[in-house]
Image (cartoon, rainbow, N blue to C red; front, side, top):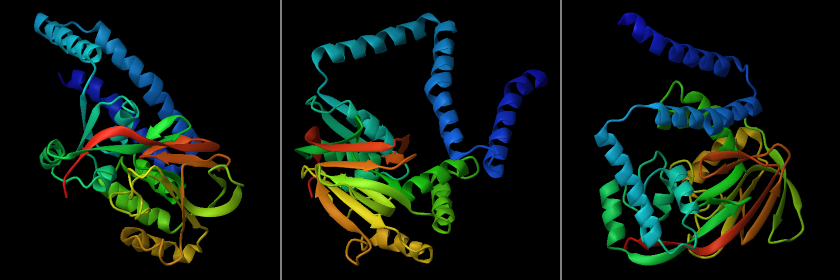
Length: 316
């Protein structure tokens, strides 16, 4: 029995140990780490899951469950789905919302993540059941959806400081739980972050070359569980709030955190804010944050889809 347990558990422990060594020693570069994650998440994991699904032995009861589930999905698609309920964080909400643009289905969000920034922008209660009930009794609204190189997002996308924090968070998740890993990542990045060079064009205008601490293309207002990077953004006005924080001296970077938390950076001259329907951002080797999902893109083309998603907003 012990031998069988070790045969199952030992390979997992070895892989965790190797991952920890690579993270602490810096054996893999950021590009190599991102590429390896893509191979595992997009290719190897689906192959393993499909292989396990199709080679497993199922009893009659389990087969009946599969038949009923797939028949239910088929019936919903054939009849035209009227409502979709998503339970999860900003990343999950982003993935589901992208499939609902201009479908006419009503989208209900039940916050279940760590940051829940979209739920905050939509003025949902923190309690999941209270949030769902508030929407059921709410008023129909149509909110905007953002697109970056064809991929959808509901809240905020951008590059710079927030990307560095998310990358560091992924490294620390092997040691700390999600929220604690994020807090430690922020403190770690604050002391060593360097600005990046980017060319930015607003609504087809001339490109401006800038050294940026952070650039955010905001439909919602906050990132990172409450940092109000775009305090005046609205989900249903048909515009992005483009927030550009130019290069800040390293000794002043720690001041950005309280400014973002309070939304003061737009009022004290730290940031420039422009409203736009289309934005293009170019930077070699740039990594873009798309509602918490990191993507590599030398060129990021954004456009707003006004009123693309139907929801029910809680009454205030």
